[in-house]
Amino acid sequence: MFAKYVGLTAEAAQAIEAKRKNIAESESDIIVRELGIGLVQEVGDPTARPAKLDVGQGIALAIGETIHLFLSKTDALSGRPVGSATVTPDGLLVEGVLFGKDRGSYVQKPMQFYQQRHSHLGADGKLVPLSAYRQWYAYRDGKLLPLEALKDPSKTRRRRTSVQMNDRLSKLSATELLKELGL
Image (cartoon, rainbow, N blue to C red; front, side):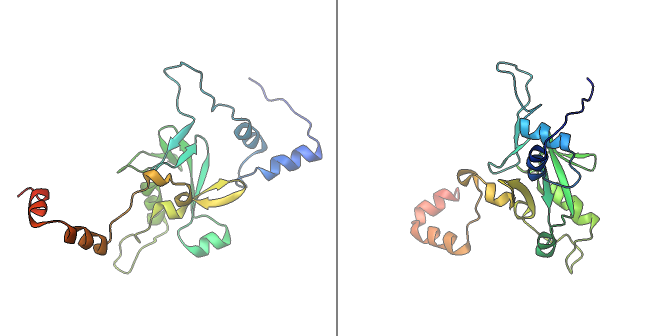
């Protein structure tokens, strides 16, 4: 295949620039992404790869999409991510390293990779505990949104608070509690 020069009107060039997700993205990358080239699957092809990857809790990202990591609000407000990852059919690609699924999610380990690189440590010398879904961002409709906002509500994991646990336990009879505990 060879590259062909295509003359663009000012309006076409402006439309392409409006779709730019990051400064390093070429015009060709933008056009390929917007046209969906390489993402279309052949019907009935058993070897076809998915056009999207569920990175966890129902968040489907397009193969080839770039997501951005902000470790703090200051980073987010400045618009300068500390890192980025490209979605592949097998996981997230970060600086040539492929991160696969870990405990149901693809986003935690790549975030920890950048936390280690930037010495994002707490007073105890350990990585600052963060929700990767709040720290990774993707572009949707021209806006940068945290992955948390893209979760499928039916697949979102929630932790029970101690009040909820105590409330549930208070409603169980002694025999039901013993049965549930396996005693």
